[in-house]
Amino acid sequence: MPDATTAGSAEGALLSLWLATAGATDFPELRGTVEVDVAVIGGGVAGLTAALALKRSGRSVAVLEAGRIGTGVTGHTTGKVTSLHRLAYTALDRTHGRSAAGIYGLANQAAVEHIAQVVAAENISCGFRRVANYTFAGSADALPEVRAEAELAASLGLPATFTVDVPLPFPVAGAVRFDRQAQIHSVQYLHGLAAAVDGGGSFVFEGTRANNLQEQTPVIVTTGNGTVLAGDAIVATNVPFGDHGRFETLCQPHRSYIVAAILDSPPLDATFISTDEPMRSLLTVRLNGVTYLLAGGEGHPATQQVDPASRHARLAGYARSRFGAGAVAYRWSTQDNMPQDGLPYVGPLNPDSRHAFVITGLRKWGLTNGTAAALMLADLLDGTRNDWAPLFDSNRAPSRARTGPAGVPAAAAADDRDGEKTRPKDVALPVADLQPDDGTVIEAAGTNTAYYRDQAGGVHAVSAVCTHLGCTVGFNRGERTWDCPCHGSRFDVDGKVIQGPATEDLPPRPTP
Figure (cartoon, rainbow, N blue to C red):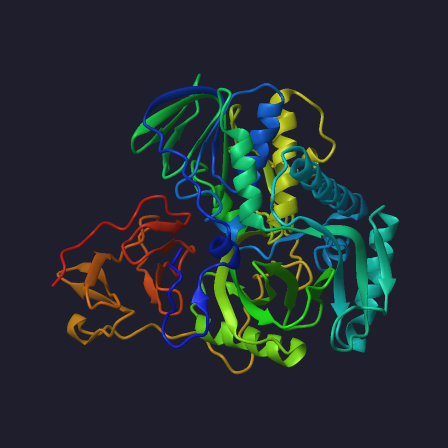
């Protein structure tokens, strides 16, 4: 992701708080050939949780991470560990039935407890602490939804109550409360998982992008400098590859924004999300003697071009007006894969796969959905029955169900509020007129080239043609990335893949 320098006039460093405070990892790149029982592609919460569970069961594993551990989607979360996902149970009951809602809830609640157990067993220092989690109604109009969610969740065996006593510094009408939930420093947690996986015949490789997966005996995973031979493979890359594009039709990329503002008070013993629109997700944390308020929201389909600065500014304004927060220290965005029917996909990578498996569509609640999914696959590979797995089966028939705002997706809520319109396509500027921290796409001789001028005045040039399906990328000024408007792929200013479905970098082009 972009570095910690500020971009333009926006407030705060363009970096996740978790990445800014986690320290660095130093696992090697894969070179040569490694043989293991299971290859795990992706070093986020889903991949590493699966890898550790499999290692604990006696299997050897190799985790392949394209960047550094924690720098993907998991490193850009809010850090909530909870089975209360806004108004998910009402939405799932409506679209899939009460049994499905119950299985979803029990799987996610089990994930909360699994994370607690792993933190304790592996002695992971990640700020894990038990808190209550609330979905709150800011207005009386939203109160019936909150009451219904509380009653339904309690009937499903979840730790739910309805309450009007909500520990926020502003009045609300009421809330669903889930007890004994948690919050963590997500990147420190991943560092702990990776350390537990590596060694004893198992491996974690960083800076190692998987380029190809051949499902045969053994499964062959090739990278730029080496090969993994394995009995089975798990693709846990948020946006899958090797699936022949089928999950692009079943999931939608969705982007949202977070600011971490300094708070002159102790952290709250609770986390929060609003049911009213615009949605606000809230968490407080104390790190290195400083208390931060994390305010998230402002989501939109990733294929929609918007001004990130205005999104961050609205979140910063909310933090100040509602909490009296001070300056924004960090700001970032995250991009999630949203399943169209509201349920993650866990199971065979392709309909006929026998040794390649996938985890995707974690619907913005990756810390628990990803953990639950990883445990399902670990059971599947070990031949152990898992009662949750059929609901999440990646080979299930496509559903026409759309969940709507409470559960997202439903077109994943195009969020053009407050008069903000979709940003029009940029007019190409001559490279000579580019200001520092700006980019432009120029077509010449039938070739589209993306040019970026850095803060020192140097020009970076790469192909503007997305390596996924050939759409032309556009420059995201707020985050200094090249973004594909068709399927949500993202690249840094030097063309390196940040976010799939693209798996290949944008090739370099000559500079003027």
